[in-house]
Amino acid sequence: MADELILAVIISADIFLASAAYCGSGIRIPPLSVAVIAITGAGVLWLTLSLSALISGVLSPGVCSAAAFVLISITGISTIFRSIVRTVVRTLSEKGDLSLKMGSQGLMLKLYLDDTAADADHSKVLSAPEAAALAAASSFDCAATGLSCGALGLIPWRTGLFAFAAGIIAIALGNFAGKKICALPADLSWVGGVMLIVFAAWQIFG
Image (cartoon, one colour):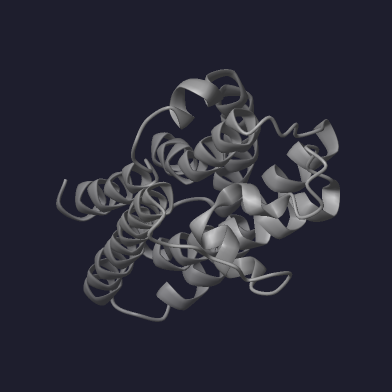
């Protein structure tokens, strides 16, 4: 149970930071939108973890363990890279050396660079469809993590349930600490990437 809970907390790190970004920008996340984000992330994690467990059942334990470590580490590294890109873009934008104008196109790219881009109508309220777009963008990490963890013996339904609860709590905490988090000069999404790599190493070598 501890492993499922830890993974759910790690997955919710991005949700926490996204919620903090919305709070810092004065954008409200209504209860329905909170539910959409939490359910989507938990559902994707449960589905991909179940699929990964089926696949790992036909492979040798050694191969599964090695593949799990490599895939989880790659997911963590990609999260760290995204954080670096966001920090660079933010720094250049503040200096006036970079201007991104993508109009109504490239929503996923916008969300890659800025979580608050989901508020497409600038209403300062994240509607359910906008929350679904944010959840879809965030679910890529959930999917990659779920597909990587099938050999670790995690129980999919329990992990999904923990992820749902962790997602709701993460949004609440992000809303509480939003202004302080947004005041920091660098993007902190790299923390989730480091946590994933540590989790992978702990599972395989611990």
